[in-house]
Every structure is written in structure tokens, then in C-alpha cells.
Length: 381
Image 1 (tube, rainbow, N blue to C red):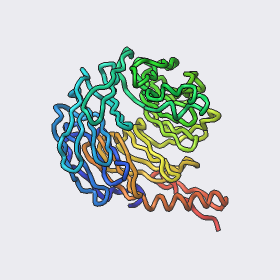
Image 2 (tube, one colour):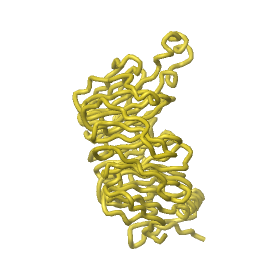
Image 3 (cartoon, rainbow, N blue to C red):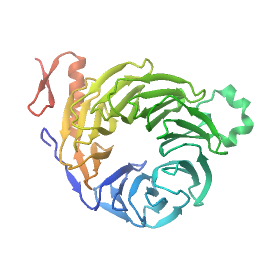
Image 4 (spheres, rainbow, N blue to C red):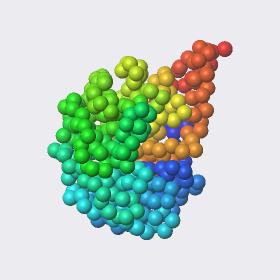
């Protein structure tokens, strides 16, 4: 691919920016949702477009792909469900009164968050609203879901045997600076997590450890105990809004408008690495096989060695911000506001990263900076 990386394929079918990219659980398909009001289905086997979902009356803000069904939400205030084999719209979920900007599918539930200040729960199969979560004073931007079965100890579970039918909880983050936790069955707010002084842009849940992480425009990340609602830690080193989060092996990665990604040890709160080189906000990130991949407002994707922080490759070609990335079978997929989906072969960098890790683990390597700012591992004989 060369030092800067060149795409093995560029998909230009959309007529507007791509706002989101979703990979099916079985890895066979990708779904893109676009400003052109349509979604497209792609085969990961040959990168061909296999479906074109049309029907929304405004732009698509977000999408989610299951193995047999695709879900899209839109500025037209609706959510749609599509059959991935036929391309037909099989359900329209109506009820929101403003832009629907986020959806989440869990078990038989479909959750949605909207600029109308509410979140809602729908039956996936019955096209019916089950619950409305009302209480935020401003837009609902981000969602997470868990079951209390995932966080309660066995003895606690026995005490609440009669409540087992109502164990699902929804977590919402809002521009009103709060995070709220709701009982799905009743719509009742279980907890309001107070502490942020800016909009909550992203959430990530670690249910087995009873922890929730929230990133905000107040430049901080906060950790919460999801059972007690207690604020556990505040991560404060960013100099801009925290836009995206990734949690891997008790390491938390945060992408920010300050043009950096930082890596934190969850257990201590210590910041152990900062990944620089971005020329604009970090809009999306993904960890894969010891490599941290990022997408930025500078229209580039980058790959860093997650341990050393060394920039290993820059992927250039997009014209505008990269909104989302996915990785499958050592291919990197980048979706951009320029309307293109680009596919990059990362086999070489994955192999190189293993070599780099081996060199530094054995302390027989050094880094040489190239003219383009990237680094190459050099073995010392």
C-alpha cells in the first residue's frame, strides 16, 4: 500500500455523506447510512453493493445491522426495519417528534434516542412502542443497555426473584449534561448521574465490572458505578470535547476534539499513552490486534501501535471527515462525509505490528521516523 496507504476499493454509490457504518454479527455484510436518505448493504466477501434501502424522507443519522435485518433512523423522525435479503422495508416505527439520532438493538427490543428529549423502546417484531423515557431537558445523544442480571451478585438476584421479568435497564446521555438510567419495563428513572458540565456525547458500559464510562463536551470522562450511581473517577487531561470511547482489557481509549487519543488504565485512572499526529478532531476509533485505528476530521485514518503510541500508517484519500470505521478480515473500512466508503488492506500493518512488538519486547529494536511522520521498526543486529 505504500507509506501513506492506498485504498483497495472506493465505493462511490451514495450521493451524500455517510453518517454511519455497521458490521453484521456474522461479518458477512456492512450497512452504510447516508445524508442522501438511503442505506446501502455491502458484501464483505467482494465489497459489492447488495442492497439499496430507500424510503426515508430525510437524511439517515445512524444505522444498525443484524444478520437478517437492518435498522435505520432518520431526521424524518422515524426508524425503519429492512429485510436484508429482499431490501424491503418491513416496519416503520413512528412516535418521535424530532430527529432520531441513535438506535440500539438488544434482544427483542429496539431503543431510540431523539432530539425530542425522549428515548423510546419498541418491539422489534410488532412495530409497536413499548415504553417512553421522558425526563431529559434536552436532546438524547447516546444509548447503552444492560440487564441487572449482568451486575447483581447471586444472593442479590435471589432476593429480587419476583422482579426478573423487569431486569432490563436503558442508559441515556444527553445535552442536558446528565446520564440517566431507566427501568425498561416501567419507564421509571432509576438513577440520574450528575457531574458533567457539558453535553454527554458517548457512553460505554462494562456490565461485569458494574462500570459506566461517559465522555463529554466538558473535556472529561467520568466513571460511574451503575448499581449505586456513585461517580468513581474523573479523567481530566483532554483539552477538548471527548467524542468517542473504546474499552479493551481494562484500558480505556478516548478520542477528542483536542486532536488526540489518550489511553487510561481504568483501575487507577492513570493516563499511560497519548496518540498524536491528527490535524483535526478524532471522530472515531477502533482497537484491533494491538493496533489503534482512528478516523479524524482531517479526512485521514491512522494506525498506531497501541502500546508504544507510535504512528504506523496514515490512510489518505477521503475529502472530508471520517465518521465511522469498521475492521473485518484484516480489511479496514472507512466511511466519510465525502460520500465514499473506502476499503484498505491492513494485512501488512498487522504483520508489521507483530514484528514491532516482538522487537521491543526483546529490546532489540528502535524506531526511525520517516519524512511523512510515520515510524518504521528497525531491527538492531
